[in-house]
Amino acid sequence: MPEPDRIIRLKTVLSRTGLSRSTIYRKIAEGTFPPQIRISVNGTGWHESDINRWIADPVSWRPKRESDPE
Image (cartoon, rainbow, N blue to C red):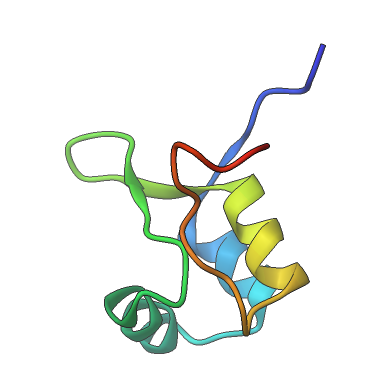
């Protein structure tokens, strides 16, 4: 059984990617970084698998579509 996808917060994303906060949000707006997901009224996070995919290949990262194989 596959392990569930964890939700990681901004602090973890910053340390894992080495990017600044402003760079992350600029890249989200450009569509070149995984968008955050809402986890509460005032909280957001990222799927760890999306961040791992971005770290593995940041240049060609694109959002995963429903039709993409896992």
